[in-house]
Image (cartoon, rainbow, N blue to C red; front, side):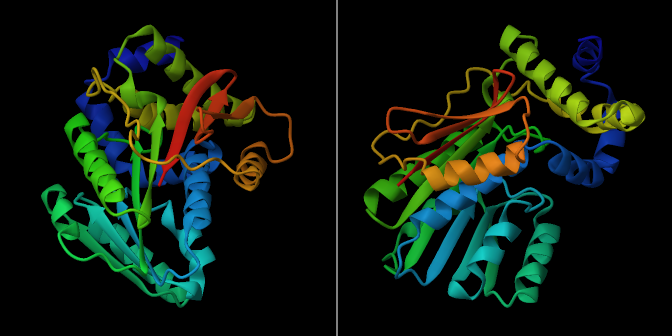
Length: 300
């Protein structure tokens, strides 16, 4: 709690932000491999995408709200391999050129046809002012506030993206799906009780993953990556998550649940728990000792 309080009270430390940005790439990869939050979100979502694909689809078109370093997509591309062509449209971000090059290089190495394009939010709806190809499957993917994502998107951008996704999927029945994931930071006010509880759980889980002889490495990770990310949750006042009204829920299959549990638990008795919620069981939640950390939803 003392370490958490320190980071929350120094969220405007310019020097710490600068140092964090210099080491962001390496710290992200380390955190992604150590803690299961990002891998849970990506594996569960990719599994849902594969389950949704009609057998006659020739092109899968993914519209990604926040592609980041692109860490979600190589696993999906590897599974698709030669079966299908993939088009990835990403909303404009500063790292998109590097991410595009990395993903295209990976796709080339496995012989997959991949096209990556960058679009502005304003162009999103214009993409569908045409006749939709019946052999093309659209995936609107929106991840918000996951612990590894760093600088968050603004609430207005999230709402714009999800509204367009909902409009397209409801207007053109049977052409695609929506995957929506949110971390604990996506709708919490800084210094609120819920924020403190969830941030404490994040620090506690990170400490659990580091044995005592690696305490210096854990402290470095907290100072240069986790702490600054926790303190960035001041943009989300009155944030309301996307609810998917008017869409058909995609029930979490037993196969998807077992696959994700195997990845998170690794056959051991760990303090994580995965639950399936929602009236139609389309919500999957990853908890740390009873504290919800990541929620995932899917609709068609």
